[in-house]
Image (tube, helix red, strand yellow):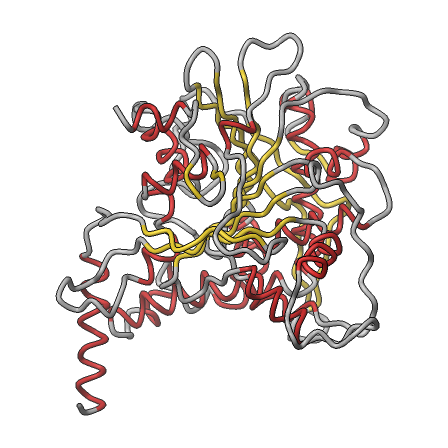
Amino acid sequence: MTFRFYIFLLSALLFLTGCASSSKSGLTVYHINSLASSDDNNASFKGLEYLADPIPGTLKNRVNIIYLHGIGWTEDRNNGQLAEDFLGGIAKAYDLDETDGIITTLCGEAPYDPTATPTPHIVIKADEVKYFETAIPGSKLKLDELVCMDKQTLAIDDNLEFVLYRVFWDNIFWDNLQFAHVGQDDDRGSSKDIARLRRKYNRILKDDLVNYGISDAVMYLGAAGVEIRNAIRGAMCSAALDASGHSFASQGAKVTHTDICNRTSFRDFKTNQFAFVSESLGSKIALDVMQESLSDGRETVHDEMITGSETYMLANQIPLLALSDLSMRQARSISKLSNEDRPKIIAMSELNDFLGYELVPFYEQLWKRSIRPEQNNLYGLNDTMREKLTAELGFEMIDMRIEFADKIIPVLKGFADPNDAHKGHANVPQLMLYMLCGAVDAQLNEKECLAAELQNK
């Protein structure tokens, strides 16, 4: 085959990607493994339904979910807001009405109806205005607001509800930092004059993969990443206050991350269990924030929220982005937690996702290939080593190796839709059941799980 034929074939595939049906052919789960065990396919995690718990004075079991989006607009920015697919996936699992029109908000990209009652939301600011030096000597970019967080409540029945705190950082950082660098190149506004000179699918890929995608990761791995992590910590404090009865309205429309976290200090309040859902780059951000919180030597509300939690990572890039963590300095130790309190990270990784990586093979490989004082670990990991590694990480790492992405051309079985593989998780009903009901010994836990009962009717 000639090079020209390969180019033609790729173009056809890209065209058909845009025309592919959103229906799923099903979910294949190859294994659910834990880094802590040398046994294959025997890992367990609770799931959101089983994390839901009551607190005194409340009638419903509830779980609070912090949602962090990924590079660019993780979901189609023309079809709705971030996390709409995720909320829709939960709603479908419980045979509830679609969430379209319910979750519109002042945060995020979708149009907002100014005549509607505002969705509860809050803006987290920097402690002081930040200025970043640019490629032009003496010129600076300004950053004040950091994230906008809103609250969405999904009432399942008289006994169960999910409260989702969606943290939006993409628009703010795009407007203040990224647009000045790559905004002259994307297919919006005045830059269409440049972008429309490109071939259609080159134009789409340039925006989705680079201008709105890789630029986020590059920015996060630089100085701006510090401010994003500060903002997430502030958002966690604000969510904890709201979950304990101190609403966003009582906190203020805009608060600094230090001020809002100071309000949680020396305060004895009770909240329902927190869980975390992250997509793409959001997984790296979530892990960084958690590791920093568990290694700073202070007992804060962040530690309470993380302890005993589960984090569901969709399409994470942690192994790739961890290359930026290589340092000449020794890392701080993570707080040692009991097996019961140790948080779990469940990486749901589609095999055909170009950007996604599994975590267990990554940490095994890193352990084996790194130099350690006690011995050279090139020859494998026994259970004692695995327990030590898990304790040092501070998290139980669990992989779900899965496949669900649509085949772009049915007869061309060797190619799956990379777009679907990266961001189609919430549209897979069976995968949502794993997130809601959990797994026991690598099998879906259907026992007394309402979502599973409804789907099996």
